[in-house]
Amino acid sequence: MAVHSDKPISNSDSLHNLKELFHVLYWLACSYSPTAAEIGKPLASTPLSQQSLTSQQKEGLALSGAEGRGFVDYVLWGDDGLPLAVVEAKRTRKDSRIGQQQAKLYADCLESMKGQRPLIFFTNGYETWPWDDLNYPPRKVQGFYKKDELQLLINRRSSIREITSATINKTIVERYYQHEAIRRVGEDFQRRKLRKALLVMATGTGKTRTVIALIELLQKCNWIKRVLFLADRTALLTQAGNAFKEHLPHSSPVNITKIKDDTTSRIVLSTYPTMMNCIDDAKGDNKRFSPGHFDLIVIDEAHRSV
Image 1 (cartoon, one colour):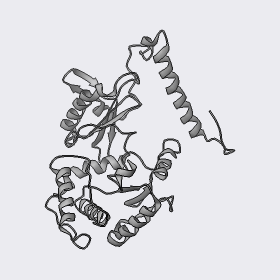
Image 2 (cartoon, helix red, strand yellow):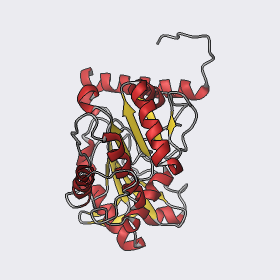
Image 3 (cartoon, rainbow, N blue to C red):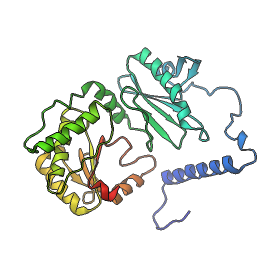
Image 4 (tube, rainbow, N blue to C red):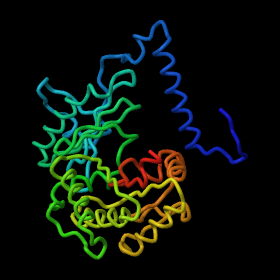
């Protein structure tokens, strides 16, 4: 490990590096050790003690599924005592996706017990898959969502409104093809349950204003809260930032290439290097932007940069 500064190494950074070293050595042992098959097996058949859990957590952990009585690895609870998420964790040498059906059974039981269906996560420590099985298939992300982000996703199930029929703000966009583009994206998101859309528009046709009107519509209908706008040049960010300030001033747009410490704005503009630095600059387990921080990511001139 190389150290390129005289800055003291904090305890949290030391612990983080030690954990990463363990992962590397574990992979090395699993891949090349002559006794790799024995690695990861439990030393005893006695289950782990649950005495440190609260009575509410015990109630949520001991669940009956189609394969008999079992235990979910983690239940994440909301302030109202309702389950926000279940986590099924497999050993690192196993495919995390083998826990998908097992996690679904836990979610079924928790919904039956508590009246609220939690979000589902399955992981092996290297791969993490969130699954809102009421809306979307699983997808791989870099880590777990924060408590308030989970609660927002749960609340959004009942708070979102129709976007295909909602009124588009004509003070932002006036041209018919801009309205058509917004309607098509809305249909893809709402009716087809897609998570991505591509707008191809010629120079001077108002792409930025179209995107701003789309964001305004999605925010108004409670589909999104925070937006990340990415571009590969600072000049594009400046231009887009001015447009956001003109048409969506209430969202407090901020360009984090200039203002470094603002993580509360609903519109964040950034270049790729700056955002990568924000992702990598974690103090212990505290990341500036978690995987669930942004609800929508807009990539300007995607044909050039992505």
